[in-house]
Length: 271
Ligand SMILES: O=P(O)(O)OC[C@H]1O[C@H](O[C@H]2O[C@H](CO)[C@@H](O)[C@H](O)[C@H]2O)[C@H](O)[C@@H](O)[C@@H]1O
Image (cartoon, rainbow, N blue to C red; front, side, top):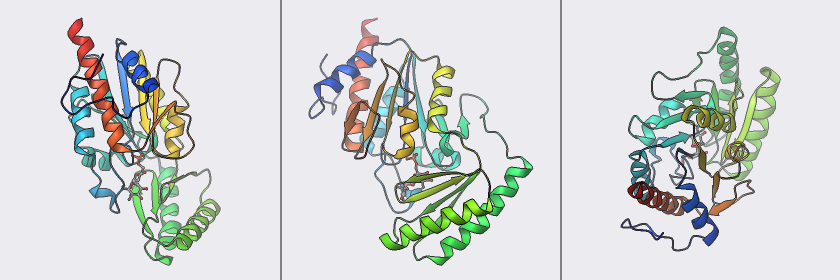
């Protein structure tokens, strides 16, 4: 099948990836699960200003309109932040805080914080707030169950030391923390859900026959690890990965999604 939608093409994509997308598009029920930052949206200094590139947004909207096709955003962001930056229709499934917060078709699945978790979040805040205050251009993003210590604009030295200090002081004060290193960020959570568990949950919820997952960061590897033959994993950018396919960044992720939409629309036309 060749591409038919204006703007979408197979150019520059490997033959293997194009073949895998063509196969994937033929399954009855398809789940397309997507990381946001670094995958659909280029990285920017202010997380609130991140937006999907127009081509990625257009492809996601096409996929959302297709029958038997569900689209999920799976992010480390707090759900509220993810809703704001993605600004997608209500039929988009949303997973925030690396799987802790989930918005499905009806009421969300968020598990409220118990008293002990609230105390641990407060203790974590006290420690990390002090660390952030001690370093130039290091700041703290609050999430329902933890914090992200951002060091994007700090010097390499300050970033490294801030991460080391934050990690050791947080672990000394708060038990059983989940700590994740991401791109210019160190994330702390009092619950340890992963994107892998989130994708498994979504696979069951949508009764998907196959899953497409795209992501760029270390935390996306938990999701890639859950993929089975017939699924397709796409790594955006550099770094080690379990994904079978790789593209340089959001522009090519958008191209892949547009092609998948082409193939899926074509297949449904034929039915
Ligand atoms: O799982 P993701 O959707 O990739 O979210 C991971 C983190 O993304 C955000 O931080 C990253 O993107 C920012 C905007 O481009 C950038 O300024 C920062 O350096 C990156 O680490 C978000 O702020 C975090 O909460 C997410 O966990």
